Image (cartoon, rainbow, N blue to C red; front, top):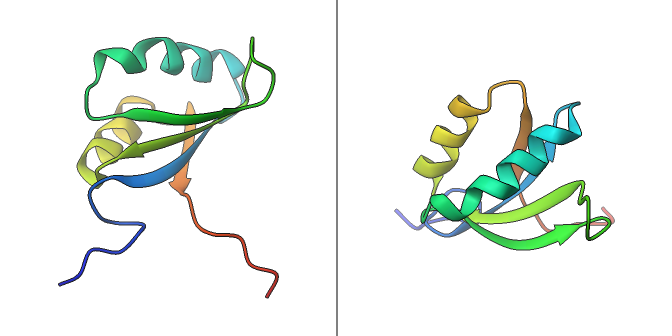
Length: 83
């Protein structure tokens, strides 16, 4: 079965704080310790980004969701469309 852009290895995900902006800062500080997660882009002020674009495989994202339950919102990065 072909790997889709939102479910395959090296998929891109949008990560935001689910209310506590400190949760995203703590995640960003700790991401270097996890070789399965790679920050591709930070969005927002350099000192306090509000959104990250992360590349990871689905298993790593599932583990991240479990570790950060109710702290981070994680969703697949999909192309924008006007229609």
